[in-house]
Length: 330
Image 1 (cartoon, helix red, strand yellow):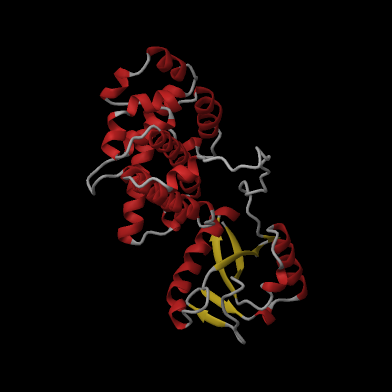
Image 2 (cartoon, one colour):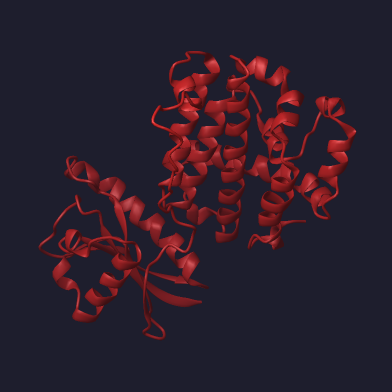
């Protein structure tokens, strides 16, 4: 086990502190506590995140020391500690943004090495749209905004949650927001279990309606060498995510209660689940389906229309096969 110091800057619209405040095992520091080398590392972290360090220069710092086996676990533990303190402190200045910025560093206290924090996940990038003429087409966005049905309202709420997930850096919240997006899209009541439908649009049809599908399509899906393994494993994993959601919401569980491997894996699965199910619902809306019960009754037709075997094999199963948690797959 290694001792790590994790320090992060609060948001540019957060708070300024003249002195250091200690809360249990967390410190809220003044910017003046940084030495020259630490400032240089923080500037590197800001540059890697494409942020203007000058806007965060006077923000309070939050820091803690944890004992962990690796950097990733250390960061997860620190996030829990930081969150607990910030949850308590925000009431003192409700007009300020008690939120962590992505700027910070992690210091291995055993070796003395300081590394600027950076998000190693895929990041958003600029997209270029080509001009298709001077007259704007009436596209799916126009159609959704001008249609008022149960399914379009659910679709809009779901997109809201998934966009929040995309912009969230905390792994646990990212998972929860994606699950909320799925519930907004498909869940009809508190006792409704949507796990089976979610697996359908990941590419793993199940239940009685599976028999209504084209046998040729089923053969194509099952032709991947890992298909059978994931067909057996995914029900338990998706149910674990559902339990994760309930425990997080009702019991206040934090990311430290789960291994880093589980968090990464659940995050990957929920991202796929949300995107696939939203695509399916959009297809249903464009085919004039208005309610969730109607959507479920046309499940096999919608699946056959939206199913892309190459995507399921080359993207979803490929990413699951290469996820860092192969050890979790029995």
